[in-house]
Image (cartoon, rainbow, N blue to C red; front, side, top):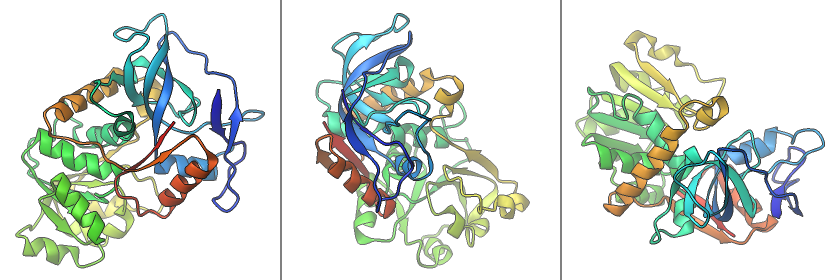
Length: 331
Protein backbone atom coordinates (compact mmCIF):
# COMPACT_ATOMS: atom_id res chain seq x y z
CA UNK A 1 0.00 0.00 0.00
CA UNK A 2 0.99 3.65 -0.33
CA UNK A 3 1.59 5.62 2.87
CA UNK A 4 3.08 8.88 4.05
CA UNK A 5 6.04 7.90 6.23
CA UNK A 6 9.03 9.44 7.97
CA UNK A 7 12.14 8.07 9.67
CA UNK A 8 13.73 10.94 11.61
CA UNK A 9 12.09 13.82 13.44
CA UNK A 10 11.96 16.86 11.20
CA UNK A 11 10.93 20.49 10.86
CA UNK A 12 8.76 22.16 8.25
CA UNK A 13 11.89 23.64 6.68
CA UNK A 14 13.43 20.16 6.41
CA UNK A 15 10.20 18.22 5.95
CA UNK A 16 10.85 14.51 6.26
CA UNK A 17 7.54 12.88 5.33
CA UNK A 18 7.68 10.87 2.10
CA UNK A 19 5.16 8.89 0.05
CA UNK A 20 6.34 5.27 -0.09
CA UNK A 21 5.10 1.77 -0.86
CA UNK A 22 4.99 -0.20 2.41
CA UNK A 23 3.57 -3.45 3.74
CA UNK A 24 -0.13 -3.64 4.56
CA UNK A 25 -1.00 -3.68 8.28
CA UNK A 26 -1.52 -7.04 9.96
CA UNK A 27 -4.65 -7.12 12.08
CA UNK A 28 -5.02 -8.43 15.62
CA UNK A 29 -7.99 -10.47 16.88
CA UNK A 30 -9.85 -7.31 17.94
CA UNK A 31 -8.95 -5.28 14.84
CA UNK A 32 -10.62 -4.30 11.64
CA UNK A 33 -8.65 -3.42 8.51
CA UNK A 34 -10.06 -0.26 6.94
CA UNK A 35 -9.60 1.07 3.42
CA UNK A 36 -9.06 4.73 4.28
CA UNK A 37 -11.24 7.24 2.45
CA UNK A 38 -10.25 10.29 4.50
CA UNK A 39 -8.22 11.15 7.58
CA UNK A 40 -8.09 14.10 9.95
CA UNK A 41 -4.86 15.97 10.62
CA UNK A 42 -4.19 17.03 14.21
CA UNK A 43 -1.74 19.27 16.09
CA UNK A 44 -0.43 16.28 18.03
CA UNK A 45 0.73 14.67 14.81
CA UNK A 46 2.74 17.74 13.86
CA UNK A 47 4.26 17.62 17.35
CA UNK A 48 5.16 13.92 17.01
CA UNK A 49 6.83 14.64 13.66
CA UNK A 50 8.98 17.34 15.27
CA UNK A 51 10.07 15.44 18.38
CA UNK A 52 9.87 11.67 17.71
CA UNK A 53 12.08 9.55 15.50
CA UNK A 54 10.61 6.37 14.09
CA UNK A 55 11.65 3.17 15.89
CA UNK A 56 15.07 1.89 14.83
CA UNK A 57 15.09 0.45 11.29
CA UNK A 58 11.40 1.30 10.93
CA UNK A 59 9.25 4.12 9.60
CA UNK A 60 6.42 5.95 11.32
CA UNK A 61 2.98 6.57 9.82
CA UNK A 62 1.04 9.29 11.60
CA UNK A 63 -2.73 9.84 11.55
CA UNK A 64 -5.01 8.80 14.38
CA UNK A 65 -8.53 9.41 13.06
CA UNK A 66 -10.05 8.20 9.84
CA UNK A 67 -13.10 7.11 7.90
CA UNK A 68 -13.37 4.34 5.37
CA UNK A 69 -14.65 0.87 4.53
CA UNK A 70 -13.83 -2.37 6.36
CA UNK A 71 -11.91 -4.96 4.31
CA UNK A 72 -11.01 -7.50 7.03
CA UNK A 73 -12.24 -8.31 10.54
CA UNK A 74 -10.42 -10.04 13.38
CA UNK A 75 -11.67 -13.23 15.00
CA UNK A 76 -12.91 -11.45 18.15
CA UNK A 77 -14.61 -8.54 16.38
CA UNK A 78 -18.37 -8.24 16.95
CA UNK A 79 -20.88 -5.85 15.44
CA UNK A 80 -18.88 -5.06 12.29
CA UNK A 81 -18.46 -6.76 8.94
CA UNK A 82 -16.65 -6.46 5.65
CA UNK A 83 -18.05 -3.58 3.61
CA UNK A 84 -19.21 -1.51 6.59
CA UNK A 85 -18.64 2.24 6.37
CA UNK A 86 -16.91 3.29 9.60
CA UNK A 87 -15.04 6.10 11.31
CA UNK A 88 -12.94 6.11 14.42
CA UNK A 89 -9.74 6.44 16.38
CA UNK A 90 -6.35 4.92 15.80
CA UNK A 91 -3.65 4.12 18.34
CA UNK A 92 -0.46 6.14 18.83
CA UNK A 93 1.54 2.97 19.52
CA UNK A 94 0.74 1.63 16.05
CA UNK A 95 1.00 2.82 12.45
CA UNK A 96 -1.58 5.43 11.60
CA UNK A 97 -4.02 6.49 8.90
CA UNK A 98 -1.86 8.62 6.61
CA UNK A 99 -2.14 5.58 4.34
CA UNK A 100 -4.40 3.60 2.06
CA UNK A 101 -5.11 1.06 4.83
CA UNK A 102 -5.19 1.23 8.61
CA UNK A 103 -5.73 -1.40 11.31
CA UNK A 104 -7.84 -0.26 14.25
CA UNK A 105 -9.44 -1.80 17.32
CA UNK A 106 -13.16 -2.31 16.71
CA UNK A 107 -13.99 -0.91 20.14
CA UNK A 108 -12.75 2.55 19.10
CA UNK A 109 -14.79 2.88 15.91
CA UNK A 110 -18.44 3.27 14.93
CA UNK A 111 -20.56 2.64 11.87
CA UNK A 112 -21.06 5.57 9.55
CA UNK A 113 -24.53 6.12 8.06
CA UNK A 114 -24.80 6.25 4.28
CA UNK A 115 -25.76 9.93 4.36
CA UNK A 116 -22.55 10.99 6.12
CA UNK A 117 -19.63 12.11 3.89
CA UNK A 118 -16.31 10.43 4.61
CA UNK A 119 -14.47 13.75 4.96
CA UNK A 120 -16.95 15.08 7.50
CA UNK A 121 -16.66 11.88 9.52
CA UNK A 122 -12.85 11.81 9.47
CA UNK A 123 -12.73 15.23 11.14
CA UNK A 124 -14.72 14.12 14.16
CA UNK A 125 -13.21 11.26 16.23
CA UNK A 126 -10.21 12.87 17.99
CA UNK A 127 -11.96 16.19 18.62
CA UNK A 128 -15.21 14.58 19.75
CA UNK A 129 -13.74 12.00 22.10
CA UNK A 130 -11.24 14.49 23.54
CA UNK A 131 -13.95 17.04 24.27
CA UNK A 132 -16.38 14.45 25.61
CA UNK A 133 -13.88 12.80 27.96
CA UNK A 134 -12.70 16.21 29.20
CA UNK A 135 -16.17 17.55 29.97
CA UNK A 136 -18.33 14.55 30.85
CA UNK A 137 -16.05 12.76 33.30
CA UNK A 138 -18.68 11.60 35.78
CA UNK A 139 -21.25 9.11 34.43
CA UNK A 140 -20.99 10.75 30.99
CA UNK A 141 -22.33 14.03 32.37
CA UNK A 142 -21.01 17.35 33.63
CA UNK A 143 -20.72 17.69 37.40
CA UNK A 144 -24.24 18.58 38.60
CA UNK A 145 -23.24 21.97 40.05
CA UNK A 146 -21.92 23.30 36.72
CA UNK A 147 -23.98 26.08 35.14
CA UNK A 148 -21.27 27.93 33.20
CA UNK A 149 -18.44 26.52 31.06
CA UNK A 150 -15.56 28.62 29.73
CA UNK A 151 -13.67 27.14 26.76
CA UNK A 152 -10.16 28.47 26.14
CA UNK A 153 -9.22 28.09 22.47
CA UNK A 154 -12.74 27.38 21.30
CA UNK A 155 -12.35 27.76 17.53
CA UNK A 156 -10.18 24.70 16.86
CA UNK A 157 -11.40 21.16 16.36
CA UNK A 158 -11.69 20.18 20.03
CA UNK A 159 -13.24 23.50 21.03
CA UNK A 160 -15.71 23.26 18.15
CA UNK A 161 -16.91 19.88 19.33
CA UNK A 162 -16.96 20.96 22.98
CA UNK A 163 -19.38 23.78 22.18
CA UNK A 164 -21.68 21.50 20.24
CA UNK A 165 -21.62 18.64 22.73
CA UNK A 166 -22.45 21.03 25.55
CA UNK A 167 -25.36 22.39 23.52
CA UNK A 168 -26.58 18.89 22.71
CA UNK A 169 -26.29 17.43 26.22
CA UNK A 170 -26.78 20.36 28.62
CA UNK A 171 -28.35 23.77 29.13
CA UNK A 172 -25.25 25.46 30.58
CA UNK A 173 -24.05 28.90 29.52
CA UNK A 174 -21.13 28.44 27.12
CA UNK A 175 -18.39 31.07 27.09
CA UNK A 176 -15.83 30.82 24.28
CA UNK A 177 -12.53 32.61 23.80
CA UNK A 178 -11.71 33.67 20.24
CA UNK A 179 -9.84 36.72 18.98
CA UNK A 180 -10.11 36.91 15.20
CA UNK A 181 -13.40 37.88 13.50
CA UNK A 182 -13.49 34.59 11.59
CA UNK A 183 -12.96 32.58 14.77
CA UNK A 184 -15.58 34.56 16.65
CA UNK A 185 -18.11 34.03 13.87
CA UNK A 186 -17.29 30.30 13.82
CA UNK A 187 -17.87 29.73 17.55
CA UNK A 188 -21.01 31.87 17.52
CA UNK A 189 -22.47 29.78 14.70
CA UNK A 190 -21.67 26.61 16.68
CA UNK A 191 -23.67 27.85 19.66
CA UNK A 192 -21.41 29.79 22.04
CA UNK A 193 -23.54 32.07 24.23
CA UNK A 194 -20.80 34.55 25.13
CA UNK A 195 -17.59 35.24 23.20
CA UNK A 196 -14.59 36.98 24.74
CA UNK A 197 -11.34 38.12 23.14
CA UNK A 198 -8.53 36.57 25.17
CA UNK A 199 -6.11 39.27 23.97
CA UNK A 200 -8.13 41.88 25.87
CA UNK A 201 -9.26 42.18 29.50
CA UNK A 202 -11.17 38.92 29.96
CA UNK A 203 -12.39 39.70 33.48
CA UNK A 204 -13.93 42.99 32.33
CA UNK A 205 -15.55 41.35 29.31
CA UNK A 206 -17.09 38.67 31.51
CA UNK A 207 -18.24 41.18 34.12
CA UNK A 208 -19.84 43.25 31.37
CA UNK A 209 -21.84 40.13 30.47
CA UNK A 210 -22.91 39.69 34.09
CA UNK A 211 -20.48 36.81 34.73
CA UNK A 212 -18.67 37.07 38.07
CA UNK A 213 -17.38 33.51 38.19
CA UNK A 214 -17.35 30.38 36.05
CA UNK A 215 -17.93 26.84 37.25
CA UNK A 216 -15.91 24.83 34.72
CA UNK A 217 -12.97 25.82 32.52
CA UNK A 218 -11.94 23.66 29.57
CA UNK A 219 -8.47 24.72 28.43
CA UNK A 220 -7.91 23.45 24.91
CA UNK A 221 -5.03 25.86 24.48
CA UNK A 222 -3.85 29.11 26.02
CA UNK A 223 -3.89 27.93 29.63
CA UNK A 224 -0.45 29.29 30.50
CA UNK A 225 -1.33 32.88 29.55
CA UNK A 226 -4.83 32.55 31.01
CA UNK A 227 -3.41 31.84 34.46
CA UNK A 228 -2.84 35.59 34.81
CA UNK A 229 -6.61 36.02 35.26
CA UNK A 230 -8.15 32.55 35.57
CA UNK A 231 -7.68 32.14 39.35
CA UNK A 232 -9.83 35.23 39.86
CA UNK A 233 -12.78 34.05 37.78
CA UNK A 234 -13.02 30.30 38.50
CA UNK A 235 -15.33 29.51 41.40
CA UNK A 236 -14.17 27.89 44.64
CA UNK A 237 -14.42 24.12 44.23
CA UNK A 238 -14.80 24.62 40.50
CA UNK A 239 -13.35 22.46 37.74
CA UNK A 240 -10.52 22.76 35.24
CA UNK A 241 -10.03 20.27 32.40
CA UNK A 242 -7.05 20.61 30.10
CA UNK A 243 -5.35 18.76 27.26
CA UNK A 244 -2.20 20.88 27.49
CA UNK A 245 1.03 19.38 28.80
CA UNK A 246 3.39 22.36 28.99
CA UNK A 247 5.95 21.87 31.77
CA UNK A 248 5.83 25.59 32.52
CA UNK A 249 2.13 25.60 33.47
CA UNK A 250 1.85 26.21 37.21
CA UNK A 251 -1.54 25.15 38.56
CA UNK A 252 -0.67 25.81 42.21
CA UNK A 253 -2.32 29.21 41.77
CA UNK A 254 -5.65 27.37 41.88
CA UNK A 255 -4.90 25.59 45.16
CA UNK A 256 -6.59 28.13 47.41
CA UNK A 257 -9.86 27.56 45.55
CA UNK A 258 -9.59 23.75 45.78
CA UNK A 259 -10.21 23.41 42.06
CA UNK A 260 -10.70 19.88 40.74
CA UNK A 261 -8.32 19.34 37.81
CA UNK A 262 -8.92 16.86 35.00
CA UNK A 263 -6.00 16.02 32.69
CA UNK A 264 -7.09 14.44 29.42
CA UNK A 265 -5.18 12.55 26.74
CA UNK A 266 -7.50 10.91 24.23
CA UNK A 267 -5.22 7.91 23.62
CA UNK A 268 -4.81 6.87 27.27
CA UNK A 269 -7.48 4.20 26.91
CA UNK A 270 -5.83 2.50 23.94
CA UNK A 271 -2.37 2.99 25.46
CA UNK A 272 -3.30 1.14 28.65
CA UNK A 273 -6.16 -1.03 27.40
CA UNK A 274 -8.76 0.64 29.61
CA UNK A 275 -12.46 0.82 28.65
CA UNK A 276 -11.85 1.29 24.92
CA UNK A 277 -15.48 0.44 24.20
CA UNK A 278 -16.51 3.74 25.77
CA UNK A 279 -14.86 5.60 22.90
CA UNK A 280 -16.86 3.71 20.30
CA UNK A 281 -19.94 4.48 22.39
CA UNK A 282 -19.13 8.20 22.27
CA UNK A 283 -18.90 8.07 18.48
CA UNK A 284 -22.26 6.31 18.30
CA UNK A 285 -23.77 8.97 20.55
CA UNK A 286 -22.29 11.58 18.20
CA UNK A 287 -24.05 10.00 15.22
CA UNK A 288 -27.32 10.29 17.12
CA UNK A 289 -26.73 14.01 17.64
CA UNK A 290 -25.90 14.42 13.94
CA UNK A 291 -29.13 12.67 12.94
CA UNK A 292 -31.06 14.99 15.29
CA UNK A 293 -29.37 18.03 13.74
CA UNK A 294 -27.70 19.01 17.02
CA UNK A 295 -24.07 18.57 15.92
CA UNK A 296 -22.18 19.04 12.67
CA UNK A 297 -18.69 18.08 11.59
CA UNK A 298 -15.87 20.46 12.57
CA UNK A 299 -14.26 20.10 9.12
CA UNK A 300 -13.28 23.49 7.72
CA UNK A 301 -10.55 22.72 5.20
CA UNK A 302 -9.94 19.73 2.93
CA UNK A 303 -7.14 18.57 0.66
CA UNK A 304 -7.56 15.89 -1.98
CA UNK A 305 -4.96 13.19 -2.46
CA UNK A 306 -2.40 11.22 -0.45
CA UNK A 307 0.58 13.44 -1.24
CA UNK A 308 3.56 15.06 0.44
CA UNK A 309 2.43 18.49 -0.73
CA UNK A 310 -0.96 18.12 0.95
CA UNK A 311 0.40 16.89 4.27
CA UNK A 312 3.05 19.62 4.26
CA UNK A 313 0.37 22.27 3.75
CA UNK A 314 -1.76 20.76 6.52
CA UNK A 315 1.13 20.59 9.02
CA UNK A 316 2.15 24.15 8.14
CA UNK A 317 -1.33 25.42 8.97
CA UNK A 318 -1.32 23.49 12.25
CA UNK A 319 2.06 24.84 13.31
CA UNK A 320 0.87 28.39 12.70
CA UNK A 321 -1.65 27.64 15.52
CA UNK A 322 -4.43 29.57 13.84
CA UNK A 323 -6.62 26.68 12.77
CA UNK A 324 -10.37 27.16 12.72
CA UNK A 325 -12.18 23.83 12.82
CA UNK A 326 -10.44 20.75 11.43
CA UNK A 327 -8.29 19.84 8.43
CA UNK A 328 -9.05 16.66 6.48
CA UNK A 329 -7.28 14.90 3.62
CA UNK A 330 -9.36 12.82 1.21
CA UNK A 331 -7.70 9.84 -0.43
